[in-house]
Amino acid sequence: MLYLLRKVARHPSIGLVDKPNARKLHEGTVPLVGGISICLSILYFLYSNPNFLPHSGLYSFSIVILVAIGALDDKYDISFKFRMGVQAGLAIIMMNFANVQLATLGDMFGFGDVLLPTFIGQVITVFAVLGAINAFNMVDGIDGLLGGLASVTFAALGILFAMHGMVNFAYLCVVFIVVMSPYILFNLGFFGRTRKVFMGDAGSMLIGFTVIFLLLVGTQIKPNGSEVLRSVTALWLIAVPLMDMTAIMYRRCRRGDSPFKPDREHLHHIFQRIGLTPTQTLLTICSIAFLFAAIGITGEILEVPEAIMFYSFIAVFAVYAALLSNIWAVSKRIRCLRRLYRLRKHVCNKIA
Image (cartoon, rainbow, N blue to C red; front, side):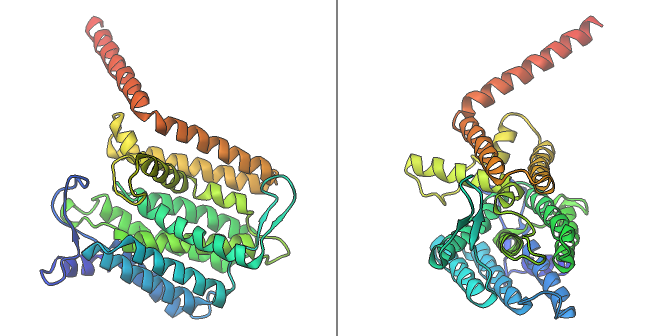
């Protein structure tokens, strides 16, 4: 699909390509077909295994709508209000027809289980869907990052589903990782720079929706009398996209800008600003995501109290937000330290 659709996207009558500008620094036009290719591959898998998942048809319908809207946004840059309206509508459909919604937050705050009234649970579920979709959309800023972070999340979810005997959901996570692997290789230029492709909004919306769908299934459905993962663990599995989105939107609102106004203040921009190469930035952020996911899985296995896991997450986020608010001073100091290190190394080599 990647080989086929990248040629289709370049056709003058289609023009589904990303062009460089002040915010996008890649070379030449790049086809935005990664998400469409992944969607078609997942649809083929589900069509070949019609009874593989409950409500498979509803999920397929949802991702087709999201990918279509994402592709239109990639082509025409449609209003974010319209996109979010569609996302919210699909969340409502999912709640009413698949009966997947937040009913409890568990003992997240340390005062006993938090049971949500139906209406409140539905409202929070809609915001959770919107948050997850847009978190993965916003984090897609450098080659390989969205695919890498999504792979970490799907791997963690697959482990937890397998541990609780939900083999089909675990297998779906593996399918997503396998399907995304060719895209990651294309995206990183392993098959040549001329064959490079991008995920596009179609792909980030697909991945974000799938992740929140699996998280809701894992936290709310109890196959053996207990949930696959606690609600607080979900925060750790998507910690990097979630913290990046929340901090960025807060800073934009504080400046008086729209929270959806694009800028170059994301985590990957910060790492590159302090001197890391794109490859080093990719490996660093994915390693951080892996560490957070490992903390979440370990907390599940060791049954660490939910309140401890939650307040630890809040503490980590507070540190991240504090560093981000002082990023100019922090990045300047790091650059100075890097220059001093290189100078010291150069002097030592001269003396030697």
